[in-house]
Image (tube, rainbow, N blue to C red; front, top):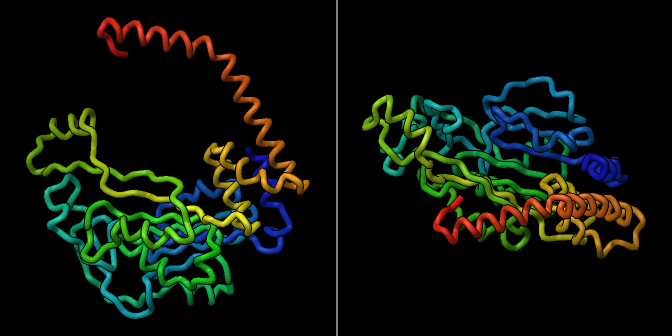
Length: 309
């Protein structure tokens, strides 16, 4: 749906104030989620070990090599064997010590670092609003978000946080606290998962490990949760939600948000584009219906005979 996304990002509201995207803990990210809106977006990439690469797809890129926390100060940073597990919080060994890949959390060095909340960083960059915020800060995501200025926080359109289901770090974010804090201004939209094997690697032979990877289902151990702002009255939030929904093929949800504004020509045009995509799916549905029916009948016959496919 490139057409509808291009129409939205070229709306006057975004030409005057480009979309602001922030990714905290961005080392290793290719920002593919934002590729379709990059041309009219300012990216703020935050990570203490970030590589400043030339990124020509964004309107502007700001690299911030700092450790982010809820408040300004000096804190101990725990550098782990796997740099992606490094955190301001101390790893809690009792939680994962017998799991496959536990070595990733082994602390190899402790360093004292100045830490900063997001507020002074935005001030230094002369940015007064954030549209889409992604935080992956190894246990302190919620603290960072909670301490963001309320005037900025309440206007965020899309929010991505990464709480764990287990306490990998001492005093880490609790997933229930994340939902409890966000419920007033945001609603849950999507959740994906990170996986691991709850098995001691020391008890596995090389062959066991191959079988583990090939046939054993891993367990869900952390989540990437997407929230969207509840407001539809604010045009900026409304349009960014449409971009998110369209990008994730949620056409009926997007249309439902647009319908109250159908008397406005711009929104009527967006609805028309969405309707054309829905109409295409209807054609596809009727075209493939004989196949759907055949599979359904075949499945019932086999089930009745005790055979499952």
